[in-house]
Structures are given as C-alpha cells and as structure tokens.
Amino acid sequence: MRSTRFLARSAAPAALGVLGGCGALDGYQSALNPAGVQAERIYHFWWFALAIASVVFVLVIGMMLYSALRTPADPGDPEAERARTRTMTRWVVGSVAVTALILLVYFVVDLSLGRAEASLGRGAGESGLTIEVQGHQWWWDVRYQDPSPARMLRTANEIHVPVGRPVKLRMTSGDVIHSYWVPNLHGKKDLIPGHWTETWFQVDEPGVYRGQCAEFCGHQHAKMGLLVVAHPPEEFAAWYQQQLEPAPPPRTPQQARGLEVFLAHPCVMCHTIRGTPAGGKVAPELTHIGSRRMIAANVLPNTRGHLGGWITDPQKIKPGTKMPPNQIPPQDLQALLAYLESLR
Ligand code: CUA
Figure (cartoon, rainbow, N blue to C red):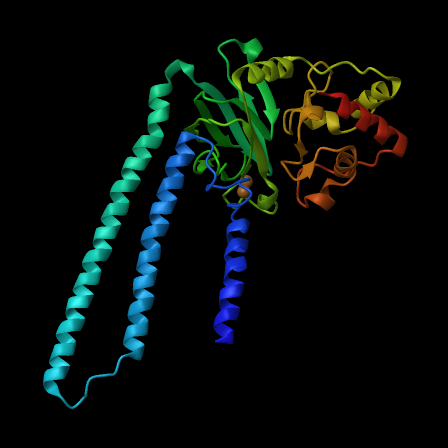
C-alpha cells in the first residue's frame, strides 16, 4: 500500500519533468506550443497519434496482465485446449486487422496533413517573403531576397519575419547535411549540399522562437541553434530598413580603435562589416552584430563578456569551430568589443 502511494506521488512530478523537458511547460522551442497555422496542424496530429498510441498501450498492458493472472485451462482437457486455440486465433486475426486499420488511418491523415501544409506555398504567390538559408558547420547564413538588389539583406543565425505573411525558405548547405527545425512554427526540412530545398511557414503570434539543427552534422551539431523573431508588420519593416543600413561609423576614439583592431586582425578575412573594408564571406555577417540577441549560433547571450571570451578562444566554447583563437592585447580587445557592441 505504502509503495503504491509512493509511486503515485513520484509519478506526477516525473510526468511534469518529462513534459517540461519537452518544453511543453515553458513553450520555448516546443512543438506543443504552436505559433502558426502549420505548427498547429502538426500539434493536432501529435495529440491524435498520442491518443491512439495510449489506447494501444493500455490494451496491450491489460491483455498481458490478464494472461499472466488468469487460471490456465486444464492441460489434460482436449476440448478446453481447442477452445483456447480458437480464442487465440480470433484475437491474433483481430489485432492484425486493427493494426492494419490504424496504419491506414495514419497514412490518410499524414497525406492530407502534408497537402494542407503545402497549400500555404501554393496560395502565397507574390505576397510571400523569400529567404535563402545556407547551413554551415555550425551556423546559419541568412539572405533576404528582393527584386531590387539594393534591398537584399544578409545576416546570420537570427531570422526576423513579419507575422501573418507567408515566408518561403530556400535552403541549401555549404558542407554536410543539416536540418532546419523551429518546432513552434513548422516541421523539419533538410539542407543538402549542392541541392535546394524549399519550405513555407507563417507565424501568427509575435515572439521569439528557438530553432535547432536537427540532423547530426559533426562535432558541434548540438551548438547549431537559431532564433526566429516574429514582428508585427510595421516593426518588421523598420527592422529591415535599419538592417539595410551600413554599419554606423565609430563614435568614440575607443570604438575607432576597435575598428582598426578588427581590420588589422584575421577577423577581416572571414567576416563582413558593410561600410568598412571588411568583406569576408565565409563567416557570419557582422554589420549589425550588436543588435543580435545571441552569438555563436545561439550558444551564448550577446554580452561583452561572452563576446570577449568567444573572440579570444572560440575553440574552448565550441571545439572544432572554424574560427581560430585570437591573441589580442587586453586594451585592444576592449576597444574591439566596444566597437562591435556599437554595431546596432
Ligand atoms: Cu547542422 Cu546538425
């Protein structure tokens, strides 16, 4: 009796812990907290699948208990033996039929779900926003497309979108296969080297949604996160306009020294800061790095301390990343950080 009570008392927190681990309670990076029509369909499908699986589970456990606890028929009685065989045959045939039916239902629901999810792209036409995303070990290169080249925009690891407008992602990879997954917004889509894949999504509630690379892509796969930031349309337009601007010029002598440090170190070989001679294309765009929430593909909050640690020894934080350590004298490092922070 005491052990039953103990089980009951520990089961509830354990269940809460499991759900919390899935993000069901805080809703951050969770397929159980949909923020768009497509994620909502997946959410309903998830509960439907869980309901069926739960019924099957309860039935199977019930039958196991029944067969373990029931009194076996007398082995010497041939009539009882034949009746047992008949009952068993009926149960096996019935279970196979029910299994086939469940699989058929899943198949039909899955097909119609896939069609419904794709309908967003078919209906969007010219109203959509197109963003190209290229996966790299281990970060996301984000390029906003526009008929006017002057309005094309490049950024990294943080995708801003307007709410209520369909967004098309055209995706590829620069090295190995990655997978784009923002659970609050849609299902997964692979990024494949030398091949373009497409997916559409729409966010209906403003907010910040965390995403994660969902295909093992090497040493730091787990540290390949991203954020989708959904704004009301006017706020998005303001953000876009601000991001199109080149980097603001240094406003203090320390920031000016910081720009010199940036240009004198290997940073300039890989990173772009528009409005300065730095035009490297193999690493994240830094023109407005100061305005981003996180650094290193959503690994660290964008604070001065973390940025300093990252620049000095990225291999300690994310071993295997392509960014080398940088030996920069303390005063120069502080100047560099002051400059990067000013890039808003
Ligand atoms: Cu990229 Cu896993």
